[in-house]
Image (cartoon, rainbow, N blue to C red; front, top):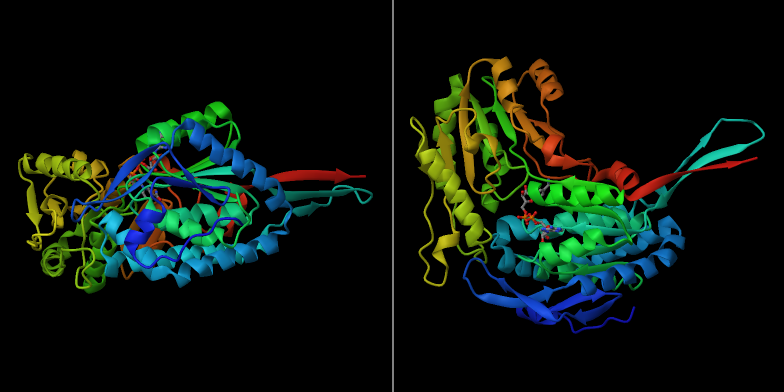
Length: 494
Ligand code: NAD
């Protein structure tokens, strides 16, 4: 590999090192245009990221195409070892990556960013250890013939990630794609590109040049050019429903596989026999309040059984009041900022709709920071909406902010129907001590990831992906690598 640079001592070194460049074929390529990257907590411009045009995007795909042939010839287990070494290089620099991530996303360093880096490195290492598992089958067809299937890579994978958990989503795509013998072009999020570039750069030191490439730019120019490039054999996208629909259409025209991880409006059903304290803690972690609710799996519709409604609300309110909202870099901070003013405006539009609804109540919790160095408008308080009709936009649509809807229920059949009433199907949780309720509800909930008495985030070895308009395909697990990053070839020998 030809790419060298100095060691990174501070986040500012990283912003400067990756200012206005793509990482293509193991080298930095300056782009003609650049985009400002803003620290949401302060409003300061922290750096200038690449704004790739179509030609600059195509150059990355060409490099990936050239490198993929040699990469696919390396035995899978050996590829895996290189990917695992790349993962360890990321883990070794976890603190600087987390510091960069906190500055570009506004997520709190202690509650969010360090954990994200460690999960991302863990996912890549998990896949690095799965090289030997890319197996085909032999088929008993005729004793004088050998009939078998092999799994082979697809070619160049385009991986497009959003800003909310950019490193974990990068890892879920890049890890399996590389181990399976594909090369990858990642389109970082223009809102938060630098931690992704740093993570990729650290990995590239352990990989052949051109196997992993990272570009940045706007969705409509760079992202669009990437999805339309004829040498891209597969698109793996995480982001909004609207963009997912556009990309799926392009994939259909080109007849290439497209994996989509899109939005959600995940229900959390709390039954009368639930462990109250556990369920309250689960509501806070499930709603990802520490990430300002900017999570696709956020438990944003909480259905409380009538019998525990008041006790639950009292405990939840007290816990939310205890969350400290403030400077993402302060170790005492639990909750940082929303990503940008546009997102705040969207969230506030939904809250205003609830406020205008007769019979509804809107309650905000906790204190906003008063520090002079912080930009006040991107901090929001955890907000609970109550008394809304079931078909209200706040109940049916993804808000992607620290806003949860609380609904009451008394009839089990009705609550299952309500839980299944949106067009999403990403995640769901049920809180009960009854095994029969757990078995029945998990079978009937229309979601790709259903949990009982917990609201945990992604585990590398457990497949994850949405139903309905939450997307198609799975991520995490061996299954996801085999099904979505390889193709099956049948070979018949007589
Ligand atoms: P977004 O769709 O606006 O952007 C995501 C990425 O797509 C960015 O890199 C963007 O530049 C790119 N993009 C935009 N337009 C494009 C186009 N026409 N062609 C190609 N690429 C394009 O999403 P966002 O606002 O960054 O992220 C928030 C959304 O992501 C939410 O809806 C959330 O639910 C979803 N999300 C889903 C999951 C999941 O696993 N299901 C995880 C995290 C986030």
